Image 1 (cartoon, rainbow, N blue to C red):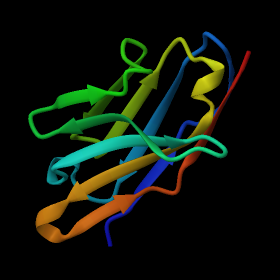
Image 2: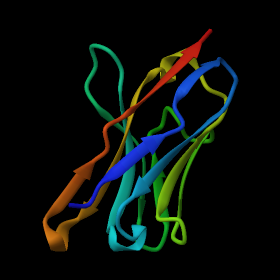
Image 3: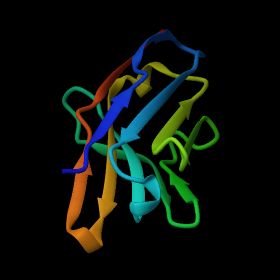
Length: 117
C-alpha cells in the first residue's frame, strides 16, 4: 500500500515561511499528479497547489506568488514552500497523490499549520 507522510507543519507569525514535505513510499514520478490541499475549521477542503507530469503546476488564486509546489524525484518527496504566510492560511494541510492506472488515490494524514497575526 503506497503511503504519503507529511511533515513540516507548525506555528509561525504572519509574514513568516514554512516548508511542508510529503514523503512517498513510491517513486513520485509514478504519480500522474501530486497536490496539496488544506482544510480550515468549519470549511471545506480546498486545493492549494498541484503538480502534474512534466512538472506543470497550478495554484489557488489565494496563494499564487506566495506558495511553490515542487518534487524531488531522488528523494521521493513533494514539497510546498509557503512564504508571506497570512492568518487565513491557517489550516490542516494534506498531501494527495494520484496513480489512476493503479486505481490509487492517496491522502496523507495531514499536518497543522497555524499562522498568528
